[in-house]
Image (cartoon, rainbow, N blue to C red; front, side, top):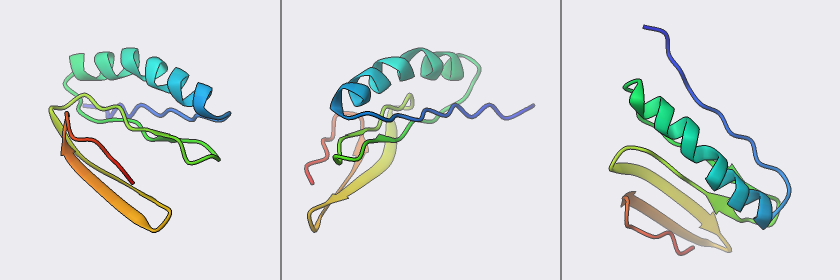
Length: 80
């Protein structure tokens, strides 16, 4: 089976990050429908991030201003 790995590149600030989250929904759903599990990483030059994913849990983390934050579960928040 061929690997399908969605890729999302976001450029342009907080509005683009918001649009990136919205743009990731359909590819993540389609990826999940074909048996795939994964997520996107979107970041802008101002340090805004979006980390949407389709499995129930996904390790993710950010570092900002000397603070590090990590999360695993879907309802965990990153506060760095």
